[in-house]
Length: 147
Image (cartoon, rainbow, N blue to C red):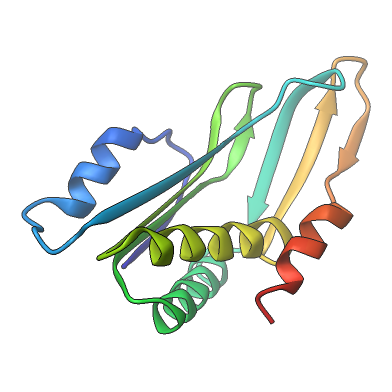
């Protein structure tokens, strides 16, 4: 189980290989990659966090996922800093013996990351407008199922 918060980009294939190397007990690997959308005139997105606190909180929710589902391995990589449309923001990888646990755990982790993770996102538009990003109602509704 692993959590990283970083400025650098990540390579999905490399991360999956690293997580599953030498493992023959894994029957399912689910990955989710979030990228910066370039819609609504978005020029860039700045992501901020509190170092230490954010990693601890992500590790806590990853441990919760492991307690809820029989995960054999998992990974959360979340980027911070200024990102452009098309850039990777987040990678969630879950691995288990069977696919249902891997899919459900990945959904649980992403719903948490979209609604409660301690990141602050600010968008800058092509016309110079800045706005803070709040969770969408649809994200909040999705997260309710895990309570």
